[in-house]
Image (cartoon, rainbow, N blue to C red; front, side, top):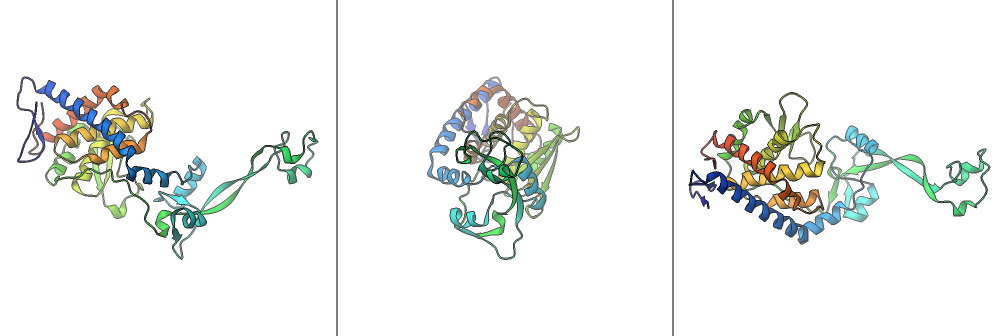
Length: 313
């Protein structure tokens, strides 16, 4: 069906008449392999260790998320002083300033006025049908509590889940960046030391008429994978897109996987990325196969126009 070009490592489709069908068959095969790889990633010891650690971090409310971002814009994993010690065998570095958030006060709650027993006793509420010991517990207020980001701590490393592409991409990455104009987007590479988006390796903004992509500087292969992932968001999704975030990430990473595979990169991290995004059946990828095919082909063609990277069609 296809062959691997020994000079540059990517897939070449030789038969011009059957090239489109061959490319579709290749993408179907690659997506089927990705589905299998997602299942294997979820079953791996590495993923289970990572998942266990993630489960110990709170899912903060929108209000607290905003407070964290205002006080520590680069925060990625946040926990209390004692929690870092007990749960993660890490300690807060001396001199670090706390991030203050709101924590709920849980107490037995009067079924009528909603107050805790002490406030209920001083209120005008006349409810006395059941003793306070039998009241259901609920949120009766909030108090400020200090938390700290992982970057403010030292100690035992947290397990990492490597999701970046790898391989020889020194010549490929410039072609990927140059393809932006053909795809109707703009790209900006930002130094890691100045990166403002936390753990994310890339972002796609639809604020203007032309989507703008920002990519954190990294290994060229990793930047190729990130850039193509964001290209897929730019081409497939916008602010009005009805698909949920998980569906959008499935599609974008599948496109990155296909383009990376075509140009000979190692895309093993795509399976771990998708495993971390959703517990849903990875076969959802296959239901979106046509959108993924078309977008992957569009990106491959655009990249091929800007380097020694022949397109499949």
